[in-house]
Length: 260
Ligand code: 0O2
Image (cartoon, rainbow, N blue to C red):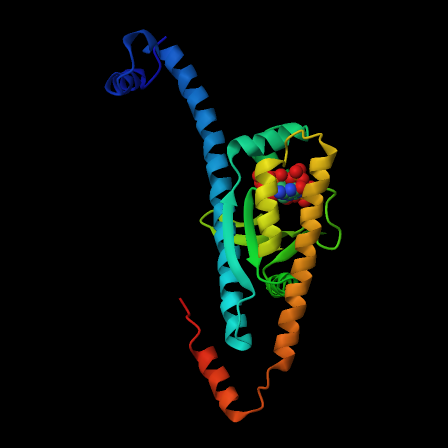
């Protein structure tokens, strides 16, 4: 039986360059349905990743603004640098399979909290907690989870503060509350984590002596972090801002902070 519009469809397929063998209307309708379903899934996934990448940009901008604001008041940056990354599809699917989660877009959004990741590298340890406080003070930010691997380092020696925050993203279809993982660490912690990630993380290394050496490096680095902070605090205490000239210079330095 011929369906209404079938000839139009056929012309469409011919024009689209489909080979003659697959221009059977029934087969075409089946292909269309399949293609439609696949495209729906792909578009859902694209929408999710768009929300994730937008949330990541929002958090980055908030951090950049609070860093500049801090510098204007305290004359130094708490944030040394910021890195962002969207988790790859392969990495998302591996994580879901490891946790036995069915790989649907809905489950990705619900169970994978680190699709959008922001890494904040600070100069000193106390900066980490200052940045955390200033970030979660934002009314639109909701803190969902907090893991302090600085107070309680991982057995590997890994140190960082991990936050899962949720931020509203305004999209044409409405507001989408989106999770972002924020990792905060010092330059020294980042040095250790980056090299350790390269040489050991997620590899089955069973050499206890080497693992111990890596952990010892992390401890040495942690002591250096503490010492650098103590030196900075002592230097600050020795500054004498009461002299008029120093006060003027201090105000000029604050005025000179670049805003872009
Ligand atoms: P990548 O490639 O950095 O994105 P899970 O994510 O399931 O492994 P959980 O509990 O959700 O575990 O997260 P966890 O352990 O709090 O933090 C995971 C992230 O922290 C990792 O991301 C790493 O970035 C970092 N991390 C955790 N432990 C270590 C460690 O021992 N060494 C180093 N170098 N980094 C670590 P991903 O997604 O595993 O990897």
